[in-house]
Amino acid sequence: MSLGVRRLSPAEWPKAFPVIAQLRTLDEAEFLRRAARQSFSGYELVGAFMAGQVVGVLGMRPVHTLARGAYLHIDDLVVTEEARGSGVGAALLEFAEADARVREMTSVFLDARPQAVSFYEGRDYVLHAAPSMKKML
Image (cartoon, rainbow, N blue to C red; front, side, top):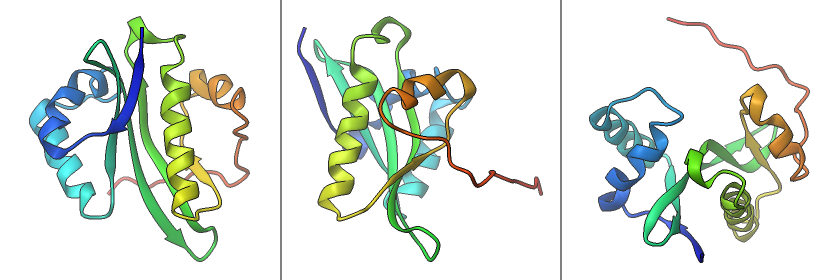
């Protein structure tokens, strides 16, 4: 079965929701609000399609910091349970990496759930030494 990967237009974002809902606990309206708000900072949704159906979604955004320079941050990467192990996640990562290269960015950063670390390590991602910290307000 043929796999296609491309950016989603805002009109297509509702098609991505059932896939995102497998990773994030949001209702569709809140997902659409947050994606729209993030899009003002360059956030984009990328879809992976098989037989015309969305089977994977990646959310990414360009970031520029003093510490890291210009890089691409992957906020979300999720593949439907049925499509896992079929190369969809790898294809989404390849799309993001190619996009970062076109933008002349030197790296890709992401936060990984513990159960996904081996997937990323298998694609040459390494654990970052800086711990991630937060404070709820």
